[in-house]
Picture 1 (cartoon, rainbow, N blue to C red):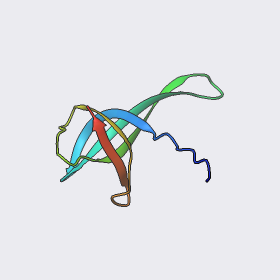
Picture 2 (tube, rainbow, N blue to C red):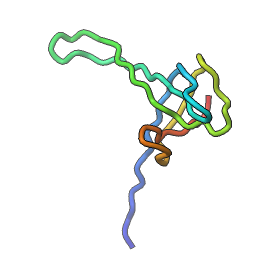
Picture 3 (cartoon, rainbow, N blue to C red):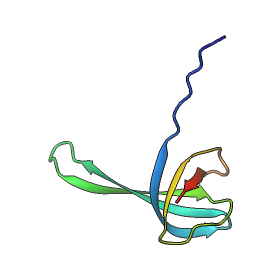
Picture 4 (cartoon, rainbow, N blue to C red):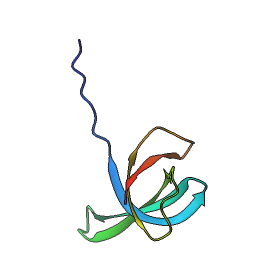
Length: 82
């Protein structure tokens, strides 16, 4: 038997900015990074398409989501909780 090491799933949290289609929401994740040369902090935003099976979330709500199985070309994340 091999000793298999399970990878820990990445967990993100962000704000719902759009209800894209049925069972799909667009979530914007904000992170702050430091410029390597000038040492100034700047805001970095990224949008993810997240699968929302039960259609529980609306625009403006905070959501926690993680990596799941791919459902389309750009949507491979699933909602965990509010």
